[in-house]
Image (cartoon, rainbow, N blue to C red; front, side):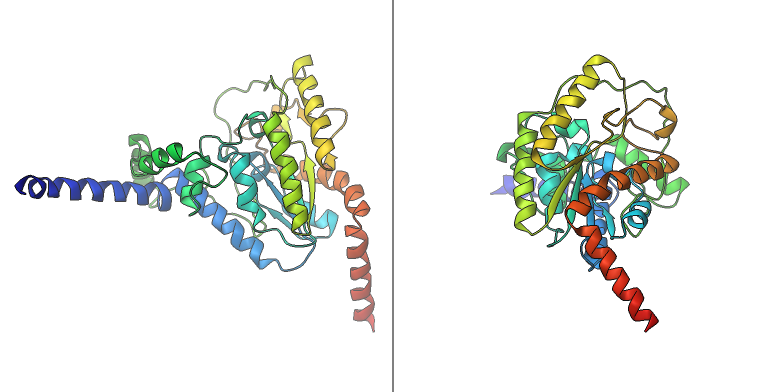
Length: 327
């Protein structure tokens, strides 16, 4: 009996250390904690908008960092919410995590960057950690073995992460992360992060995976079951216009258009060649480019929404309200 008692202090110390690491990684200070906080804030913002129809935008960081929701809202006349998350969360987890916010009458606009579309199983580096962080472990079909390993590793913060947080506390008086910047009332990031290194044009070497086609097709069924409508868009990306990249974007657009209405520039396939439009990655836009992108997107969406009789209903409602004000 003496051996377990002798080991008890070590077991308690190890458990305490792991628990503190888990709290840091998932709830306070680690990059995953900021992603979790951003997600919960976006859910809260969506819950506050009771008017329907709403335009709900989702995808990875290429959606989060490329839209000006205010411009879209002004152009379309309906509430717009940016629910974009982080590409490495993966298609299998992004879609169900946002589906819970969808209401009857909503228009759901999915803007999946190529990282998401080319993935073979819908699960990426942050799929399992994100599910754990939001209290839905295994979301998206994460295998049990991977889930257990990931859960254990959340109690082991990296030295680099701890060092960064320590520097933040000294220099800023608080810990920060990539997703810790404030959001607008519509879920857009309020700041821009700029690239420090040299730019190079992105090359898209593969077309959309069979899994992505199947999962987005399933998502359309799930969205329609909630009385909403799915629309798709190609993202803006700073990329090469070589034959391979353009050919793959053409294939991607053909496959996506079979699933749901797809909006994009049919000449360029949304491939951009001016690096000045982009912030820190090939899919993140500077503020002015977000406005340009949103203006273009609004014009592309108008015919689709008119076909769905969304804008006509909204225009009729606005006319009634205007007439009532003059009575």
